[in-house]
Image (tube, rainbow, N blue to C red):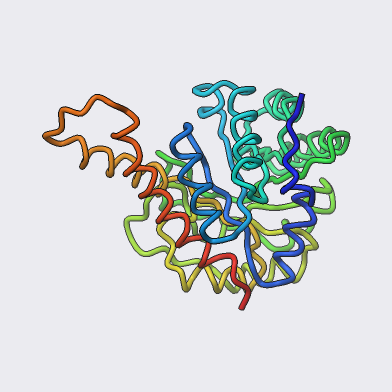
Length: 283
């Protein structure tokens, strides 16, 4: 049975609209275990900000679906943080269905690498399914390089195609390809903000920026002013956690996990708090 946090009464659809109207964005943070979850929620408390907790298939396989959802839901309640649980980059209808049954507030179906008509078909099917759960649905259009994929390939979202996609699917939010990529950037990322503004003007949908790790704060703020109301953060969370652990374990014979992990949790909190302050304040 789903545990409902009193701090997450507003549906994510409405919250994203609220943030978009206020020239603000929700930070969507991937968590991988209890320690990363705790670091994120500590930051949300300190920043007094809402947050989206994201899980990928890999994290679900690692933690366990029901364990992950219940852990996140109980933690949101105990920390009294306004938050939602979101499925990130689902590659199948079946996984979406399982996560909705488990109590996710929001799901992303990513069929962006399929031909447009196939992307529309599966996205529409997910939208119809999610309506019965009152869940928010995100999709992706264009080429946003995933880990291991070339960042040199250009496949930006076309504004007219985005408008057609949204009308045909009824999707609530759309991840757009405007120059961001998953993972770290070799060179300073250059977002096509003019394209983003065109997409905003021609669509009636919440816009999402994937690949938020490593994008300068001034660029993030400009993107928010042009319609982005959800920004994903994953790589930097994993990176700072592992760097902290590696540093603390050098020449260290400590075997008590309760002593080893807290500095890494604090490192995550510092990172996420800074990101929350960047994206959540309307300008």
